[in-house]
Amino acid sequence: MWWFNKVKRTEIWDEAIASPIGDIDAAHRIRVICRSAADSARAVGSFADRAENEKKKSDIRQNQRESERYERAAKAAMEIAMKVSDELLRDAAVRQIVELCLKANDTRTARPLFRAIHAKSIIEDVLQAHPSLRGE
Image 1 (cartoon, rainbow, N blue to C red):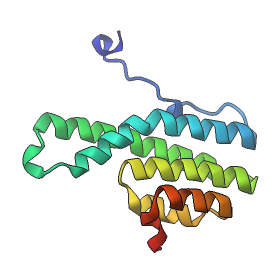
Image 2 (spheres, rainbow, N blue to C red):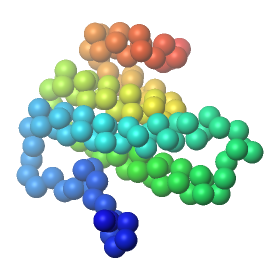
Image 3 (cartoon, rainbow, N blue to C red):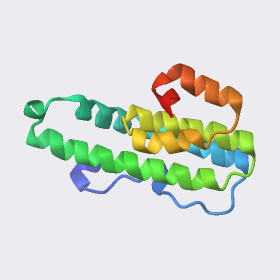
């Protein structure tokens, strides 16, 4: 059991990429990263919604860990997305990252990423799921 040994878990976004990967593999890796970090993003988003008097010291430490985990995942996913040359695959991958950011209520990151999407069908899908992005 890893918590007794105090060995830090290796996350998928912390793993080094051994060789150049293709666009499809990159998009798949971004999808896996976003799905793996979704629980942390939800935790960060729900913590931000709570009132200050409901936040305990242990909850604040846990939120800090979850926030760092979410941020590392989002950063790694964005770095991989920048290397995708196929526009449609890149837009689909960026959509995954936007969804991750919105789960964490991180609209400061989600809005510029949303504006980077060029495929009309993906833009319409995101706006249908998240009409608050329409204001930009």
